[in-house]
Picture (spheres, rainbow, N blue to C red):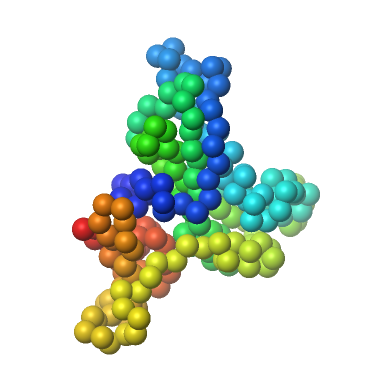
Length: 201
């Protein structure tokens, strides 16, 4: 899956943490190894959940929020000992899942992006656990953090037609241009991803 231009922008992410790689993270080529890079994404995701859902969000004896699927893009090498900013943006919330986009920045450049589909696991005891609906309180708290696009116009019908599925187009101003997209057949704003149809300029 190709990265979108907005995913490379530090300003696109409302939540971020900073830390420095450890010497123990280096591979034989003296770069931060991929396992460590994955752990940076995991730490940022965990801290995001703690910020939104409370300090105990990183564990649960009942329903556990956990990744259903992750796609990681390694865009550049990450180097020791320079500071890394790990950023998170919530782009969609459904009844049984939500989607995060995470990015790592070092020395002013995006070095990696991870797209993560999260779900809720548990309810029936660990021996018979399964994917379940998001707990209501968690879903409401997450929905409040979702970053939505802005309609191209304040009111429909001001000279710009709706998309083929009857929805208004979404316009996002980017640092180096803009992104215009349709939410696609499912009608869900996924930040220009999923089945959204987008163009950049």
